[in-house]
Every structure is written in structure tokens, then in C-alpha cells.
Length: 160
Image (cartoon, rainbow, N blue to C red; front, side, top):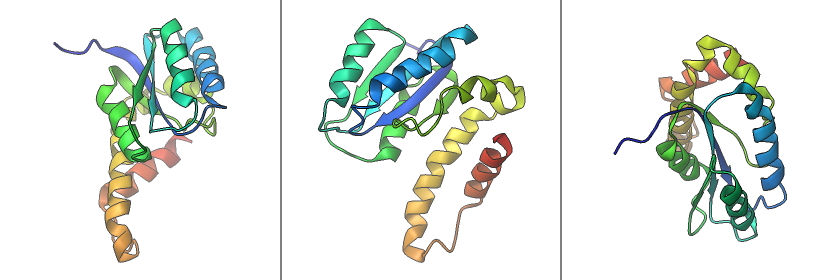
């Protein structure tokens, strides 16, 4: 059965972020609700040992737009991001850090640029490839980068 497609998925990897989870959720909802989009928020708990999952799960029971994925142990941000991307149903994917370093109020401005909107899914893919190639090339002192990595940075710079 095909996953129903939404307009937007916001993917947030979390690791021991119990102090920020509820604030992140509220900030996202406050930023996204006025847009009148069908959206989902995906929290990926990357094996937290604090109350991150418990708080996220409680929030998701009250709001079906919030989905929570839980890892049994800490695998790192890239696998957490990949799990969120794999489970996302949105036409547009936005990724954010769970510690509120990224401001959810930037999402509407980001989405208002139609040429950016068509690039978001591509950018997220490049971001994941960037992490992969950085890991692969780190043994060479990062001397050789895959051409796609530079493209990701070009897109990110252009959007800011």
C-alpha cells in the first residue's frame, strides 16, 4: 500500500534532547499551522538515555501529525536522518536539529520560494550523501570530495 502523500514532512533527529522536545514541537506547530498545509513532523529518537522518547511519544498521542521513530541504541545523526527520510510522506522534506539551533519560523519563508521548494527533496538527499562521502573521504584527509557535495553547499548557500 502506498504511503499517503502530504505537502510537508519535517524530520528532526533527537538524542538526549528532553529539555527541547516539547519546545521544538510547539515551535514547529506554531510555524506550520498558519500555512494551512497537510504536514507531518517526524521525531527520530536516536537511542536517547533520558526522557526524550517518553516526552515525544506523549506529544504524538495528542497530535497525529507527530510521528516518532525510536532506535534501540545510538546510531548517529545520519542514520536517524535516513530513517526519517525513508518514513516521510511529504512532497517536501525539511530537516532540522532537535536542539532548536534551526528556527522553525524560517520554514514558511523557505517554502515561499517556489524554486527552493522544488529543490528541497534533492537537497536533503545531497545532505545525506555529504555525510556519507565526508566519512568515506575523512581517511584521505578530506582531499577528495564527490562533486555532489559541492552542489549541496551551493544550494544551501543560495537558499540563505
